[in-house]
Image (tube, rainbow, N blue to C red; front, side, top):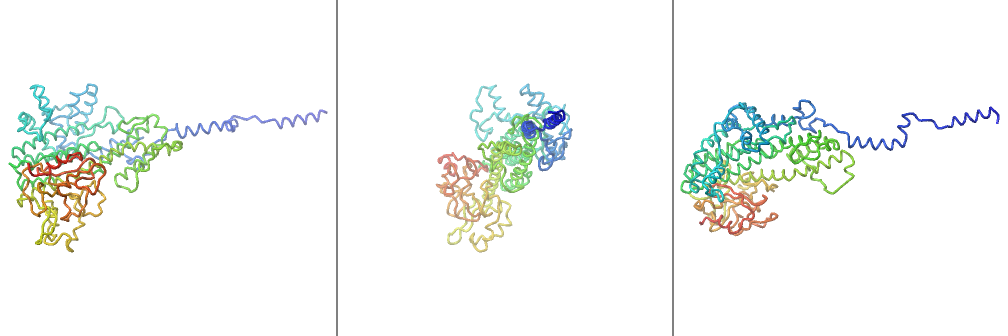
Length: 618
């Protein structure tokens, strides 16, 4: 091979030699890409934190923001939503109580767990400042509820006062109670004055940190309201026993007003405290003393005051504050902070592996459905608990599935709360109907007959029609032709008149607005019979006047009232339309009594006990 040929061969060899890759060439080589792409996807879908976007679709409210401007300050937002303009004035009844009795947080700091003393004192200071009071102000009054007083008395006397407390608790069956009444009368008068102010609102308080988490807000003073109510109830029953009906009416109205105000405090727990307080009001036996029966004018005044109670907070309004709490919890977990409460997972991990914007958007949609703002199913309605590993691969589907799991934790409490609101409304209906029956008795000398009769002895109209003038429906009553049958051509125009006091909210889905499931019970021993004549008001004051049924009828229909034996068949298990007494409430039914109270009767009540309660005979 000559020199020229050798040079050509060498040039060809050099030309065909593989080129060396630079840094970029090495980085984008196929083998490296197979490594880098999965790592990038893991970072993008798992390790990368997705910031929350502040918008109506995600955070619901967009102001106020925290000091750093990076997140919504739901605590301040809730204060803007709830606090009345009169917060720092004496038009706020809560301010009067705190000034005289101190805050409950301060009381608990003095007697409670020493480890919590600093935090409770911190909260107490906030209560004073937000009410416009001097935090160094000392209480001028002290209060002790009846049961606490009797327990203290047991320690000093060795006598058993509390093992079997009589109901109602009065000086007559517990003479030692006279001392308690004397000691606490001034405080109960102050409570009655406070709840008659235009507003009554305790401020929300924060723990001594800068997280501003809603689930850390305590409601110590709200919970203390229950002890005031127990005191008012005891005093009301003592006044009833002594024939001081006007004072008993005032105490009962105070209980209802306090319950309404507590339902305005925000949070589900405040609403449930208010519902429990109003339940105590329904237990007051305002017409329970036959020796000192209330007059027509007194019951009329009572009904008028009940009609001027503060507006009810609806379930949908209560869910508005719960929405703030849940969104605040998600916002906390998105930045790696555990908020407390039921929606807690590993916050530091969850802050990166989920897209909290997906969760927040879906939460808002769910609350829109719960509050009736939009139609359609909530996300929990299509929740499938069966494992679907592929759903956890992408951040968006992973976030949605975990949201459904977390939402499922809230569903039982929301359902129970909704039923509590509905059962309270049903109790209010029974209370109004029972008082109306008592006023009819004072006007006519008897209870209303179960139905009226024509000249031939045929039923004309129901007892419900006869009660209309005593339920604020005198105008409707005047339009009905009482001398014609309830289903005459003329009277049929009133069949679908919506009268909420005759309908149980839990039943729902009424086929027409004129239906009712409230009934009296007919029988020789009960307060009503099938003769079309009104019977004397029962001397036995715990006699049941009114029950719920599972059978619907038109509110004007004079037929179809329960007979005594059918009423004893309280069903257990799923509702059965072929069984007499019963309701769509869980666990029992409401009954209205001759003593003016409303009681929730357990479905486990025996036939013997129900027979005794339905009977007018001792």
